[in-house]
Image (tube, rainbow, N blue to C red; front, side, top):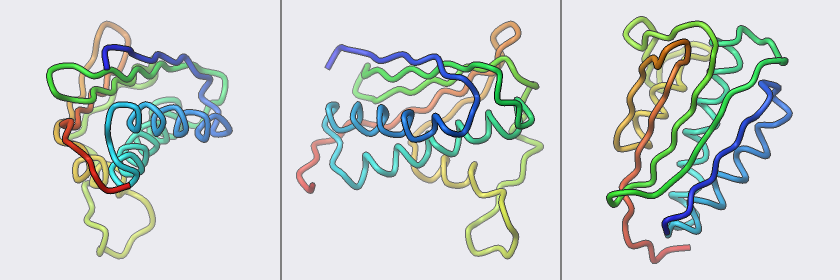
Length: 139
């Protein structure tokens, strides 16, 4: 699949369902089974939630972009936002069994995706996630 999708979305939580549905459909069209597609969608939902909550500090009037493409045997997802810079080394990386509300998004993303990178491109935060394309037989 050489096609890509690109979305520019307002930073309001009401659009999370639309984003999740688009990512899930793209993952399925790329060959992922339902379980893997749902896991990828969870990782993207966590990353987008972090953009809204942390980069934009809950402001619902900002925009960010999300793209999905397949390249080099991977599903690649990139999220770009103009919010506060993010340094992953200073963020909590809690395991699910630790007793505390919140703070597990990064753990989930790292567990689900094969590769993840955080960076800055000018005034934008850039989160790049990759998941290896594999032959899926279970639905």
